[in-house]
Each structure stands twice: as structure tokens, then as C-alpha cells.
Length: 148
Length: 387
Image 1 (cartoon, chains in turn purple, yellow):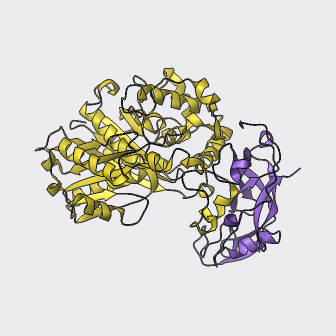
Image 2 (tube, chains in turn red, orange):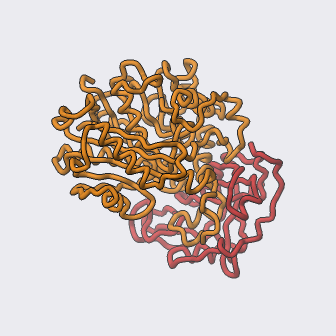
């Protein structure tokens, strides 16, 4: 259990050094999050999905991946409640939930914080959905929230 | 193929020794232990955090080896080194191999490394290599990655935090007998459960220590071993593997590559888990021990929790599987990577040199390393001559 009583924190502050500095390979993900979309890759050969973006499909190995916008819906595979993180601004946000989410798109899994979820309410198997948070002028971060 | 020399540096806190000094000190002690000199060494293996680490080390030690190995797969790197050295010596590619590792991680970086301290802050997160560039901005820590895996095991199999805590308690009991262990005072399950929650469900006392320290293990042919100081310890089998790098890519967080490396190494050695007298197990976190005990076949999948607590504690001296009798990473020493210390401890047990921590009559010991975020697993089976 967490060390201190949980309260919802403001995660909107993104220090300059934490703002994404995309490469050609991941730029679409960060831009997508900036406009409120979860961008992942779909393989036209095997039909499965993947996150993070790669040149090849990690499932079948073919170079047949294309960007698509995910539904944003998924299921909590596992989670932890971070009680100690020495890096600002995370040190001021503890305790908070970080989740491993299996997206409804088969084969794609995302790790993301759940800033609005009380750790006491976190359950493996719960339905969750993506939310978006600005990171600099054009990019964004993907968070998850409980789906009621 | 035999282990003929082992050396430990000073430790676990050595503010006046750099990482390479710790390596050199353990190398010298292993040479002395074996009855060898540096001119005998024609193979060198090491892993560090930068490129060409083993080359810089060779220069520092005044070695010009013709066989070099630098598999850098996290804490289990040294089980991979031993596996590769075993094959290389078998093939005649090298005759006398030194595996060396040292790190002054505690004195250089402090003790908050697994939670983002020790230089983690202030860096451009997005200049991190894949896949960390995606993970870092989530606030996930190294401890948190293991915690997510532990949480999943609890969900699937009903494993409890108390069962995980028992691993830390039994390990501390071993550490009490090791004068070089970082922490030696006995602890209880309640102590673990009431220690700070670093990343639920893992508490502070579920996490390994951060220490300084170095270690060296020297391997050679059976023929050469006959002329040296100690009763040789034989490498009977070895295997390794990886399933993922970052925790997000660990498809099933309740199964590791040890489920492959263990059976393969045991088959190579012609043994079963029941033949193992002691386990020198990598214990970055209590969960690491629990899941790998299952994967190696010491307990059925999902029953690791019961296995560690049954019989008053099966990992204790006198238990079914005395495990990390030097006090492990949880209590004794963990200088960044610990895999080499496992080979040293297993060797000392099979030589009968382990003093108060000795498993009486130990003939088969297994050193098992785990690296990264449960990412890489390496199993080495060691045995006495008649085993």
C-alpha cells in the first residue's frame, strides 16, 4: 500500500527537459498524443498491432507496418503504486499508479501513468481508456484513466 | 572445464576504491587463490556500463588476452561469460579465462539508484535509447518494473506480500553469518511489510542493497586445474536466454527465460532440480527469487510462495534448497550487477570453504543470474569432482 494518503495531483506541468525530442521513428506517436490520439502500428501482413513503433513487425518480422489510431481502450494487465521516485517532478506526485495496459488492438501494450486513479481502486483486469496531456507546444503524453 | 580461482574485493563500502581498483583487487586475489600469475591468463571477460570495458580493463591489468568476451546483459552477464568461457576452453580457443567485475556504485552514486536517483534526474528523457524514451516520462522506476511483475503473479496465483517478505527474512538469516554483509541484524516478515513502500507491492526490504564491490572467477581446463591450489570445481552445464528488454515487452510477467535456461543447463549437466544442494540465486528483488525458483523447476508454477515458506523456510540452511548463503543482494552486497558473486559463492560451497554458511557435503550448486527487468536469465551448474 502507498505510504501517504492519495490525492489527485496536477500533472500538467512538464519541465522542459521532459518534453519529447522525437526521432523520425517515434515522432508520429508524440504528435498524435499532442492532438489527442493514441497512434500505434498495425501490421498488414499478420493483422496484429504493436507499440512502440518499429521498422519491422515484432510479431511476424515483416516490414509491413503502418500507423493507425488506436481506440484508446484497454485492460489493465498489471500496475504498481510508485511510492518513491527521486526525479522531479515525479517526487512531488507520489504515490501514483503506473499501469501496463493491453490495448484492445491485439498485440499492443502500453505503459502509462494513471494520475486520476486512487491506488486503492486499481485492479488488474479493470477497463481503462487513454487520456492526453500536453507536453510542449506540439507533443503530448498518453495517460490512462478508469473506464466507468 | 573448472573454476580454479575466486577472489572478492574489499566491501561492501569502499569509498577510497574506484571501480577498476575493485576489479584489480579481486583479480589479484583470484590469481593468488588459484596459484596463477597474470601471464597465465589468455582470456578475459567483463561487463561494465560503457563500451570496450573489457579492453580498458585488460590494459589496466597489463594483460594482452587473445580471447575477449563482453556480453553485457545486466546482472546475469557473468553467467553468460562463464557459459561462453566453458565452451571456449572446451574448443581450445582459450586456456585460462578470468571473469572480472567491480563497481563502486554506492560510493559513486548513492543508494537511491533504483528509484531514479543517482544521476537519473535532469537528463533529457527523450534522448534515452528505445524503449526507455517511452517509459521514462511515465514516472516508472526500476523497482516499479519488478513490482508490476510481482503484482501480476499475486493476481494469477494468490502469492502474498508476506511470502515475498519471507525471502528477505531468510536471506538476512544467511547474511548474519557473513562478516562482509552490508546488513546482518535479523529481520521479521513484519519488518519487511512495515518498511517503506517503494513501489507497491515491493517494500524497501524487498529490494537489494546498493553496495561497492568486486569479484573475479578464473576458469581453465581440467588438466591445468590438477596442478593448481584447490580441488577443482567443475562446470557441468550452462544455458541462457532473453524474453524482453523493457518490462512492457515481457509478454507474461509470471514466466522468465529461466524456464528455458534452467532445464537446458540441467540437461547439459545430467541432473534434475532434486540433485541441487544449494542455489546461488540472483536476488535483485524478492520477486526475482520467487519467479525463478518456479521457472527452474524447484516449485511448480504458482507455488513458489508456498515453497519458500514451507518447512520453516526452505531457503535457510537446513531447508530443502539453501539459497544465497552469503546473504545475497538483499542483505550482503549488490554493486550494480551481482552475477559473478553467485559463481564465487557456489564455488566456495563446493570447496567446503563456506564456514558457518556451509551446506554440509554440497556436491552440486547452481549459480543463476537475472538481468535487466527480469529480461535475461543465465544458469550455470557446478559440481565437485565425483558429482
